[in-house]
Length: 84
Image (cartoon, rainbow, N blue to C red; front, side, top):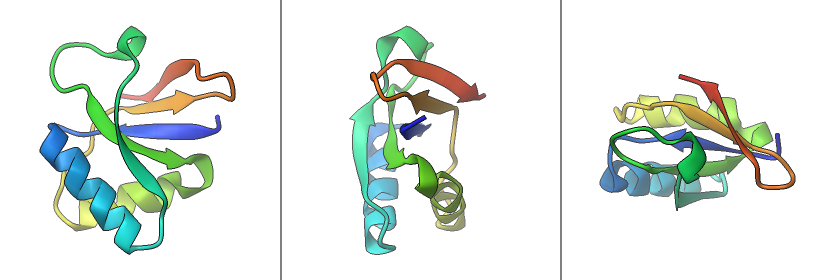
């Protein structure tokens, strides 16, 4: 996988998480999840590079924001749910 999307409960949480990651030196962007892998509920998350995934999850949880599913994006942009 090239990138991962860490799903958040709302757009606001995704924006907060993205800003916190950026302040920690991790390139992150708020993004809408690919429709083929989303269920009901919020469709927003934080997109990070593969090598930043573990650190990003830890930082998001440390600031008190819950994380949801992890969606992997391959080099062709195809999405796959990695973790529920």
